[in-house]
Amino acid sequence: MASRTDGGRRAAHNSDKTERLLNLVICLLYTRRPLSKAKIRDAVPQYAQTASVEAFDRMFERDKDELRDLGIPLITEAADVLFDDEPGYRIDRREYALPDISFEPDELAVLGLASRTWHRASLGAPAAQALRKLEAAGVERDDASIVGLEPRVRTAEPAFDAVKQAVVGRYPIRFDYRAARSGERTTRHVQPWGIASWHGRWYLTGFDTDRDAERVFRLGRIEGKVARDGKPGSYEVPAGHDPRPMIDQMAQERPPQPAAVRVRRGAGHTLRRRATLVRDLDADWSQVGLDFNDVEIFADELASFGPDVVVLEPTELVDAVVRRLTGVLRAESTPESGVESRPQSTAEPGTEVNA
Image (tube, rainbow, N blue to C red; front, side):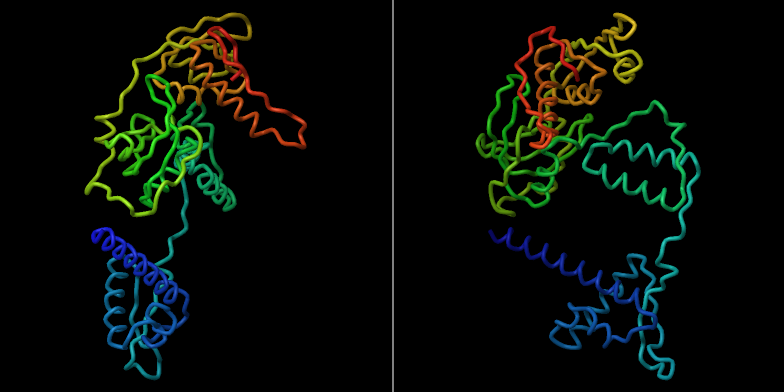
């Protein structure tokens, strides 16, 4: 209990210090003339709360050194041109501000590619906003040089943001989890330790309180909502915990499984490039054979092609795609639209599902 209390105090101290330094930077950056220490103490709330002038002087001297260590151009000069015995302080805007940024065509192409990498992910909106700012500044992109590249950094799992917040906030959570081998769905109670991407998939490391053991969970197998199950700081993360070695040791991968899909001609190029079999059926469709390891991740990819891909087998892959398409239909359906969502029945091998 004492260690958690001490940790909470340290976190609060760091937070107060960060806010104080930020207020000091704002104060010194947006003044036209140097400010005396007395005016700085009045302007920065944390300084005004100090018990004495001596306490303020000590705090201010430490903060000045820290700002300079961070590379912030803090200038000391006379606070009043008529009285040069009192020092004043300000931040040189010209040295502090970033210069105008320009990009070569190939650099802009890479930026555009990076924004597409975060497509439909938790950072998709900020990436798109950054590109809009470039365009508003008159910067034109050249997408021609990156045609055919379709990178993805997948953080689109519904559980990603909730799990990330639990790791940062250090509070227990509970969620429904579908086992990799049996497919059994159980409710798990977990103390989150860390989150990391491994082999293109996102994993949570933590302590499973029901099993009284360390566990690794793939975010793509979490179903439904992630719920808070305790207070922040109610457990300790092992000192120096690195999630990647734990994931590497405990994550179990299934051997590759074969799948058969139909792909419309002129579409699904990323599927065709890694296919084990491509056979043209007619002028419009090809049958494509593929190997996959994770049903849920592969279902995400197939469903993203829309009507250009039809899933044939295996049954578990068909079911996974059906769940996604049904979820999309429910999300898009509104009372005003007059569309009623009906869950589709479980498909048998060979059943065609428009993905």
